[in-house]
Figure 1 (cartoon, helix red, strand yellow):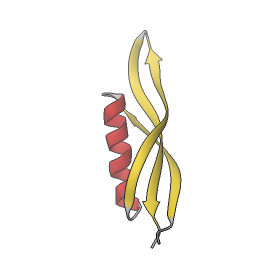
Figure 2 (figure 1 turned 180 degrees about the vertical axis):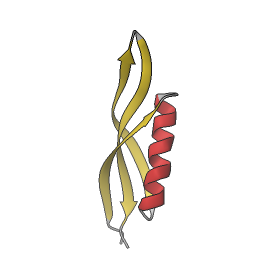
Figure 3 (figure 1 turned 135 degrees about the horizontal axis):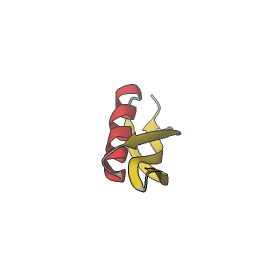
Figure 4 (figure 1 turned 90 degrees about the vertical axis):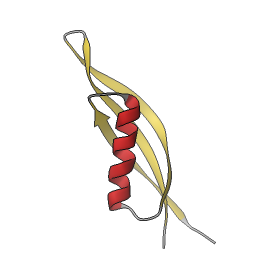
Length: 66
């Protein structure tokens, strides 16, 4: 029987929401062991002078406890 934990992280990218998700999962995997999945809880972007300058995502990351 496995026990999982969910933690919330925020990641950002200047390229896209998809890149922000990939960046967040990659970073979480470097710190947390046994990352099994992630889902996007929220998205937002930062706008300056009418242009999107940053994409941000709030991720819920699931990992299995040892």
